[in-house]
Image 1 (cartoon, rainbow, N blue to C red):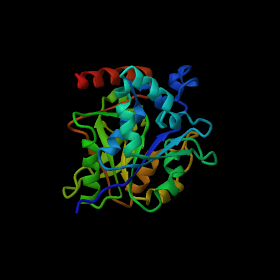
Image 2 (cartoon, rainbow, N blue to C red):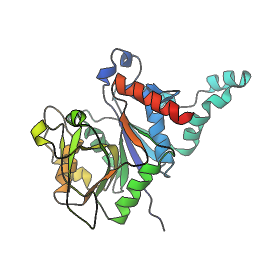
Image 3 (cartoon, rainbow, N blue to C red):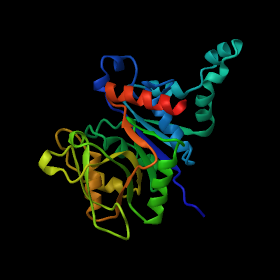
Length: 279
């Protein structure tokens, strides 16, 4: 029997400050890539792997992501009149297949990209789960293939965490993270250490993690031990701490490409890449 992940968590509580002033009117998660918001692509990726219990961790004072995924009967009636109801097909698929839970980010916790994971603890309970950063998009020929590879590695190696990795330029590595792989022939791509936003002298390699994680719930114990660093709670610090005692794998993406959509320049590039894939 093939083991599956049933629950997914998407971090969508960031301020999106690099998209100001636009995000005063629209959450960053709803900024579109072509005709769909980034977060919809992430949900479709999870659904392609049978993950239909999905928690979206959002800003505590903003329910517009929830509004986007809710049915709009008036709009549907108007679209039916002009024979354009099919424009909502992709959204209706999500409404029919996904059980979405919207959770405001815990204001008692520090700010950071580890905070949405901790906020989702009661939702996840004691099950393994997928955790996505809301800004990270995968460009791949078949939606969900890379996540399927992460899930496969998670169960095959009995790992506590498997994450997505990609080689980036020396100029970019300082803005993301740097992975040091262990010399383990039995388990290729075992992570020995990882550092967030390394200084030039701290760079381990040009491999960086990105926002695709398959996790054992042990991660909650690990994240609870983390100190706040530079005003933030970094998920990478949790990955590094867990890697000191447990098996953590950084699986490179091969038949696809990771791109962040967190700033306008990369967002524009993501639009162009998705457009080419759609032709």
